[in-house]
Image 1 (cartoon, rainbow, N blue to C red):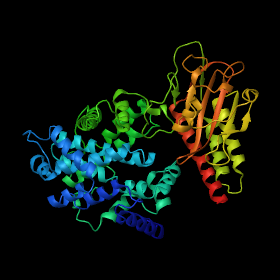
Image 2: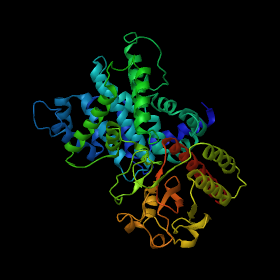
Image 3: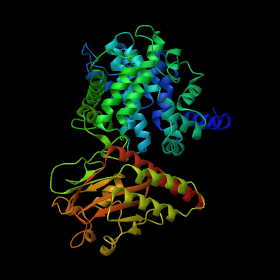
Image 4: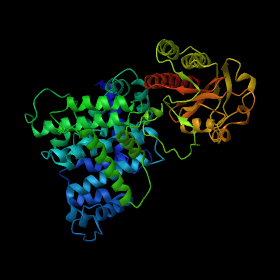
Length: 524
């Protein structure tokens, strides 16, 4: 650990955790910290007090305890004490933590990064719980707590120090997450978790799962229970991270999942259907929560991603997606993100994933880290890279001088769009541009003349001379969208973005975000 930087990080985290119900501390972190301090040793009154502080979670725990089959006697449960007596202490604690993480993964007031870390923690807990149930040698509720709390340091970073956590995500491009965490925070998320929980009553069973782990080659059965629990929780976390990685295609997910199971075969159930079983268990448990909370027909971002993985659906449909947002705002026939080739008369335009992008990104990286380089020059280079990478015949950069202003064309390549005299665009527009800006998602339009698409085109992009095919790429820093790039063609064509290209675009967007960040700091 970098001592001075690590100390500042620890001080900030402790101050946030001690601020109680203050506005700076989301309820999730406060309540999980209370539960985890006494996990496996906390008394019944302490657990009741911890959960009762959040009346909404309390009501949901009691409701679900009555409805999820946890209550075999069918005796009506009216209080938390009664729930603990009838369905068990461990089950109530696990249920409360599940609900906390589920609520946070859906909480619209939280940032996307905060929702994502909660979703990954919940998924990791459910995967570990299912595997422990199948093995029968580890306590399933303990496995849920250990796997969920293995993410505790990451949750604290995202909830209390979200700006720096976003820097970690950007800095991690081309590096390990641990390297990025040490660079920004002076310590890893696991080191932060152990430091925060060192003085608590948490037993070594849980503390033992807050250390780095790499599986060894020992045969199954030759590990201590503590080692098996650690290996299982590391597997669950890696599997959850892989499942929620929006840059991993369905084909790559299948191959990497098989390798992951082989790597951890001494710590997970010996089952040919482990991956399907883990995904199905997590999805079914989430569905039970939704049904038990009387939200029939409702969906969650966590459930959507799990069902994508179960169904072999490619989540690389979104360059910027971590946990995908609902698609109810999308007009029909609009592709978001990566598109596969299909039949038809249109020519196929495959984005070049090789030299044009990799060489260009290296040049952009050098420009973005040069504090004397004007922002307009960096954006111009990014526009050149995107235009050449797509093989587009014309492109334009929309940006705004001040936050809240409409986005206008500030740079162009080619004359196709120039002749149309593009108007200003806003995130609130009910057009494909508005969708791109508000959702911060790539939008691919293969045929702008499609009757389902035309109502969502701005007036200046319709009629004679308008490009029949184009792609929209949002440029954003943290939650603020700084601009948008449009690439277009004179002829109708199918636009194909390969999974390899997804990672390259994310790298480019991260570098542009870094340039915006530096420009804002210099102007302050």
